[in-house]
Amino acid sequence: MFTVTLLTNPETPVLDRVTVESLRNAWGGGEVLWLHPGVAAEFPVPTLPANRWEVWQGLQTLRIDMAVQASEGRRKALLIADMDSTMIRQECIDELADEAGVGAFVAQITARAMNGDLEFEAALRDRVALLQGLPETVISRVLHDRITLMPGGPVLLATMKAHGAYAALVSGGFTAFTAAIAARLGFDEHRANTLLVRDA
Image (cartoon, rainbow, N blue to C red; front, side, top):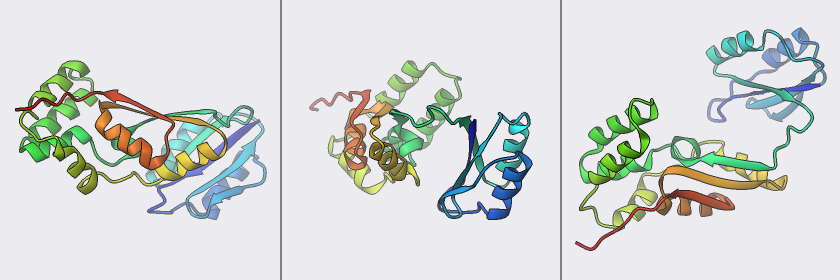
């Protein structure tokens, strides 16, 4: 037995009954359970659908995502979530760089590193070097003024925690940010790089 989950961005709830029930009927699925009207629904299917990737591609054009997983053992006991551009909308190092006046340059390095064009550690060192001279207070200012949570992140974490899961927040960025975001969202622990601050 497998479970098909259809979901979309809560800010644009485009998941409709016709789409869900059409797919359920095509795959010989069971009763639909709406997890959140317009946003998320699921139903069981007896076998793994052979055309699931083609269906997934079609749903992407409608701004609907789909997951098909074995029903047994699908409730997870561990959540490891990336922070930057996953649990929050921003890349923290890019926001710090913007404060230093080198935002566009650092954003280019970040994009190249994320695309695999640059070795991560070297790219991180290069970006951090450009932050030299920033006061330590800029971290709290960036957290307060620039960092926003990704829609769905708080609900994901709250749901996992309600079912007894252990949650860890990880980042290729800095503990000064992961500590604050982990505390805000209720993660059990966080891991990231330590940003060294030196007196001028």
